[in-house]
Image (cartoon, rainbow, N blue to C red; front, side):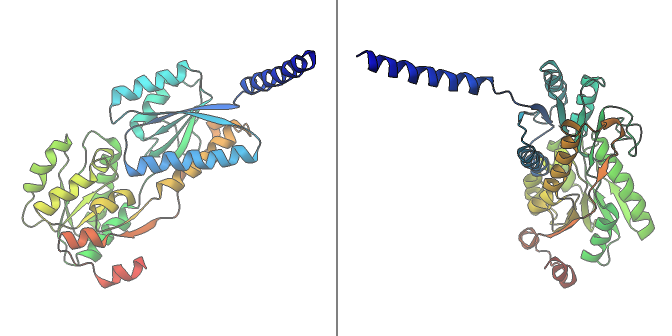
Length: 322
């Protein structure tokens, strides 16, 4: 009996030691993630970031955990989440999209490093002093898309194009910047770009229905509100004008566009993860880390959407997509 009790005590001691040891194992880094809204591009950036950073940390023998929060498109939620991350004393904040980055930078007040992704113009957004040297504890990756290539693609899709409608959320500075870039390109190409900025996604039906009869195509820049409603955009377009749409990014093109050049947001997230690793593990100074751009663009054709709006994609475009 005494022998059995001794064995049981030994087993209990071993289990206690294992449990205590497991509980005492501390995660090396905690990252607070603040994502503006749910849509394919931002979701892909988030997933690419976590997958790549997990891989890098594992290779370095380190561990990381994420406090992953989504503001559901609400700017006030961005501020609340950012303040929560600061209160929890995370090691770094990943902010996905411009309003999220602005909230994170304001909340951190240069105390905790902030990395952003899916931000079109970090200087214009007031996040960094310059893309070459941020000066503050903030840097990241830009999703500035190839606006000129996209406008020229519209010319290829609609060879006699004279007038394009630009639909975007006028409250998003990133969309305004792209609209201004598109306007400049259109002027060079002899195309009229009509400003059809909207305040709310509920304006979509009226906006499409009210497009002038001489509009040849629609351009939608990388826009968080419209990206979140890409399926609705296609539905309204299919039921009203049946115009070819060229979007600012691939995720939107998959749901409502006919073709585009765009950014692979998953790769953008991976690139941001490599910056996070340099800051957290290698100790690089984030204030001197340049804002990075993706140099490769993805070309995408959506034959399904084209068929549903009775639009024929030129063979030259189809050949390039192969």
